[in-house]
Image (cartoon, rainbow, N blue to C red; front, side, top):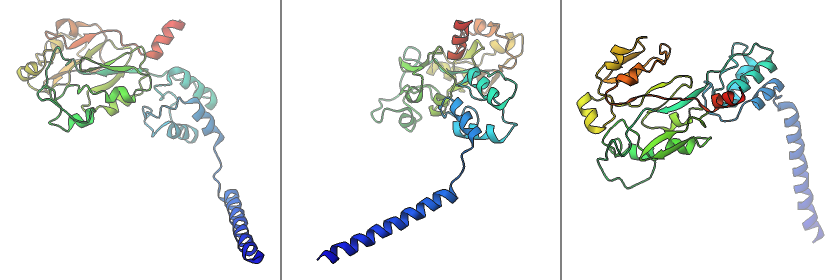
Length: 278
């Protein structure tokens, strides 16, 4: 009876010891050495994994910085200048300023300016509503108001008010996760030093757009004709601003007859901190 118990126990123990030895040997000779420089760089990054830098995430950006000297040190938008300086110090490079950005919702179609075309009952997400006749709103290009953008925002900078997504620029770090989550593609990123935004995405003809939303761009061209820098063009029935040319004079918002071009302070969280510390 003792042998019946002892022999199987010894066999299992022996197999376990052999497997353990194999794993130890494999770990010793097949392990991948961690790049210490890459590790240091990764610790500098905020961990948002938003992809705003153009890489797959913080790990991808850290790897590119460690391996490729041509990779710029100022690509982390959420980290802003503080992260850029830290990276520059580690790599021994000259500091490069980061262009901070904020998210803007290119729509003014809240419940006061537009209406719904159907009574939707189903999964309460923008992605789901989008599949039902391109949304339940009269404007086919407007905000769907279910808050997909708000749910992915790491800074709680977005809320939905009167059926329209609203960005609190004082909290926005410019990660761009909200823009990626929006199925309507009406959230876009812009430098937070700019002051004018076309708060409309409707490309329908003026009369139709105006019928669907009181604040819709009617492609009248007044903004284009009055812009002293030639920074505004009307294309596909929608005014568009070239921020490389825009001087921030505000003339476009003054002449817009429907008020869809807005002038405001769009300073994001990082710039707000800079002003407080100044």
